Image 1 (tube, rainbow, N blue to C red):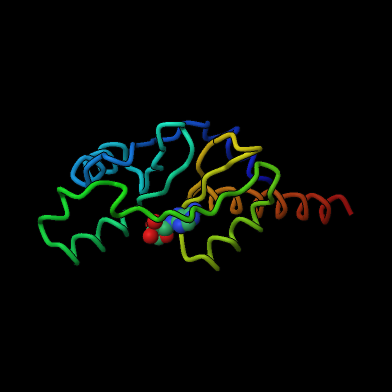
Image 2: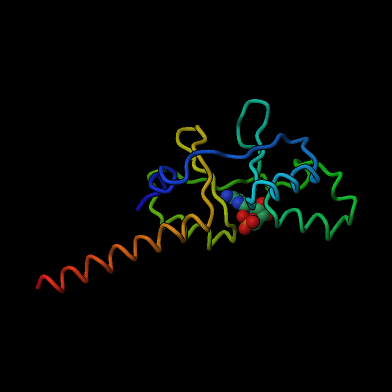
Length: 143
Ligand code: AMP
């Protein structure tokens, strides 16, 4: 299975903010949309960074209640690792494990196509395993 299979199931909606969006606003968006991260886009629409729940926790630990007034650009991770729609689910899982992050934007030739979370990857991998098991059972019964 490939990243494109996940996108065709879950869709390509991506929640984004601008660099000046406040941490308070991001927290509200994450909570309301039940998601774990938002991408930060610059004025040209390019990926400037990513802010996840973990960045919010880090900012709160460091700045206390004042963290809510900080802006996305002050708490985001700037070096965002991306993947291609043709990447295998296993390779994306490995990238997430090695990089210790749970979200990865999907980009092809500079175009942002979607965002995949560890939850999407695990779900797809479980489906794949179920299909493999069913195919093996059918093979054994047929034999
Ligand atoms: P997460 O596990 O996705 O909540 O993120 C853990 C940390 O990694 C946070 O500091 C995020 O900003 C950062 N992060 C999340 N996704 C990525 C990514 N695709 N590339 C680089 N850093 C990321």
